[in-house]
Image 1 (spheres, rainbow, N blue to C red):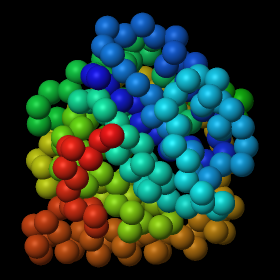
Image 2 (image 1 turned 90 degrees about the vertical axis):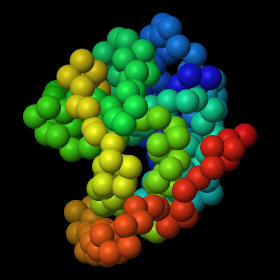
Image 3 (image 1 turned 90 degrees about the horizontal axis):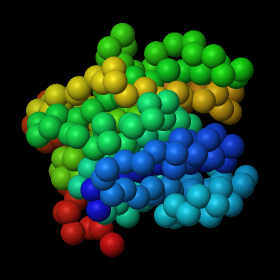
Length: 237
């Protein structure tokens, strides 16, 4: 297997269907699989995964939480040498994005240009890309051995926020990887439900403080790993 496309999804069956449709419409030259972790959804996510024939794991979490644990379930199931890591709301606008993202140079990882979409489907901002150089995996690719070397997502992040910053720091500061911001691969992050602003603001200090603490510890110990440590490549099933 050359490529594993991995994502976690929580109650976004409609958005996931569009994502999977843009993946299925491609005819890549590489072999690939799609691995989805259903993070406790109670909508039609399971039916969408069945319809598109993707590998789907399920976490019994009937509440909204940081997707780190669910992403890690998908990463553990991945068989590809290259992992395309993405959000379950980001559809592929580039019609050969799998082939393009399958090319990951040693010492680097890819970050696609991803646009935030309005409720009506208009591009309103650039999440990642040459104009907003944030090394986050709304849509991107990395060698599986590099992702496993830093322990994938850090499950200490129980609430949303700053987990992407910490992963980027581990890849860049710990492994000395260079993010490549690709303007030839474009994704669109669909509008979806988000928690109320008041709740999000309650989570923010907890996530920020954890990130700050982990960065300080890593600077002191020179250990840039997730709480669970590095993963052996043999972890796949």
